[in-house]
Image (cartoon, rainbow, N blue to C red; front, side, top):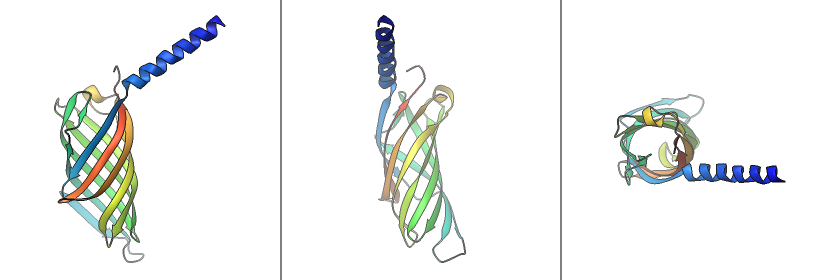
Length: 164
């Protein structure tokens, strides 16, 4: 019985430590018109296209990860559009104020009206970053819609840094 009580106490401390290390993220993003974009008709039927685009984004409030502010955010995406629906995959590069980089991937579904973006939902996960962010882990959701000069998103989730 003594060993069982000790094991339960250790398990509670481990779980409490993990819960304390998670930091919540909730931020609005405004992404501008693509800085590069390519659309290719697949050719099997009208409206079935592949699209690659790259854009710059800003967060409000300024996104901080591990106490370090994001200085620049660039996103590159691949979208397959067909019959008003789409699947998309994006890679996000965050250049941090301390010179390190944070990376994230997102994958989701989107809706279009004659190739015009209407909305999207995605799940995102952090990839290993550089410097302080090498062991960064986390993820969440991303919901986007048309915005001024591009598109706007709401990103929510959580992350952990090693040693936090």
